[in-house]
Length: 214
Image 1: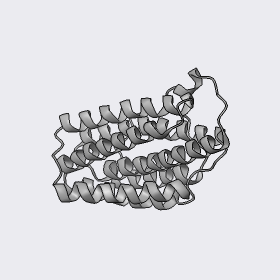
Image 2: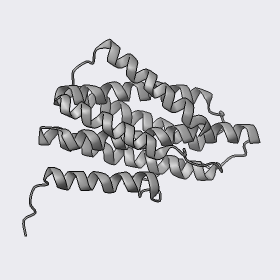
Image 3: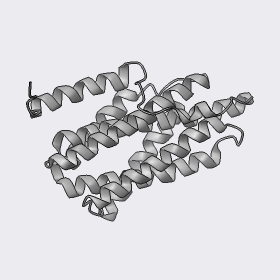
C-alpha cells in the first residue's frame, strides 16, 4: 500500500510527539554507537566530576534545543529537499542527545530542569526561520552550528584532561556539527546579518549559563 504524503497537520502532530519524547520521555535510542564506550572510565575528583557533569548538562540542553530547531524548521520548510536535510540532521542530533544523557547519568548529575522551556523557545525560532525562506533557514542552521562548534571547543578546553569519555562524545559532536554547517551552506544557505548573529550568540549565552546551574 502506498503511503500518502505528510500534510501540515501530520507534521505538526509528529512534531508534538517529538517534543514530548525529547523533554519528558526516556533517553532516545541512538542510531550510532556511543563513542564513549571505546574508553575506560577513570577516577575523577569530586570537583572534576561536578565540572564535567555541569558541562555535559549544558551540552544535553543544547541538543534538546537543536532537536527543536530542526523540527521547527522542518515543519515550515518550503522545499521537500530542505525539509529532508533538516530531518536527517535531527537524526544525528538525536544521537548527541542520547550520548549526553547517558554521560550525565554516569557522572551522577541531572538534565536541565528547564528542558521544556529550551525546546519550546527553540522550536518557535526554528519555525520562524523556516517561514522566512529556505535560504535563511539554511543560513540559520549554518550559523547555529558555527556557534555550537565554538562552544564545544570551549568545553573541550575546560574538561578535566583525564575525562576521555566525555571528550570522545564532544569531539564527535563537533565533527557532526561542522558537517551540518557545511551541508547547509552548500544547499544554498545565506549568510545572516551581523545583528542577527549577535542576537543568536546572546541567546545561546543565556541558555548555556542557565543550564550550567539548572
